[in-house]
Picture (cartoon, rainbow, N blue to C red):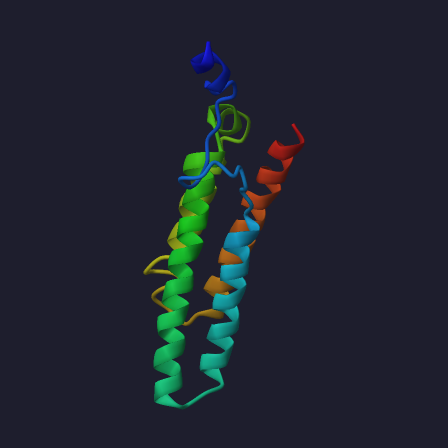
Length: 133
């Protein structure tokens, strides 16, 4: 009888080892905003030490963007979401590539940062529509 009382009654899933249930594309957007700001700062600074540090931080932030998008893609979005929004797979793929080596991680191109922010916004729009459902 005690086992029955202590048994979980609700199945949960999470993006980490603790099922907090907190998902938000804002995490990816904040990192992408940081990337865009770093690109602008590097363009305005000739100090090689500053530029080296900034590029390293930009690369770390780009990895975080990919991580946050992958968490949404693999842990939050479910088959019914992909059925309703078939473009979602492509959006996440394009966004993570924009944060990768040929995008903001590997380049100092403000245009790539803007493209990344736009893709994150598209993903966020779908995300919030799914939260309403």
